[in-house]
Image (cartoon, rainbow, N blue to C red; front, top):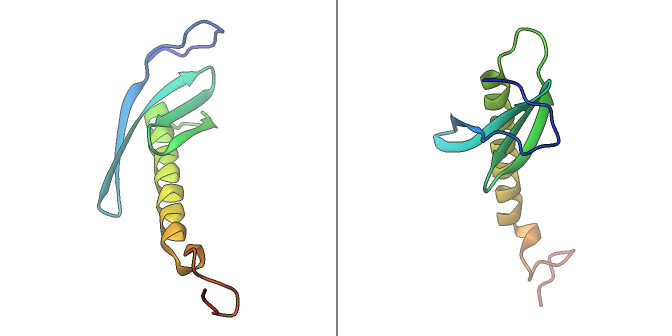
Length: 94
């Protein structure tokens, strides 16, 4: 994969896929200079520098895992009783 650093249209991303806690997650990644950018439709976008001996694919997988973990945590928080519209401080419900 060639590295891209330009204000022109970036190249189409390459696919990346991981399995985290039994769930499949997939997205695309591009390399712009020394930055790896991962995009996933439901999960969002995350970027990190390409440093050391790490390959772009390795960094992309790690970024996708971070996005997936953040998504799972948000989903769990949304399902917690604290986010129930009938929940009130002190346990009183209306």
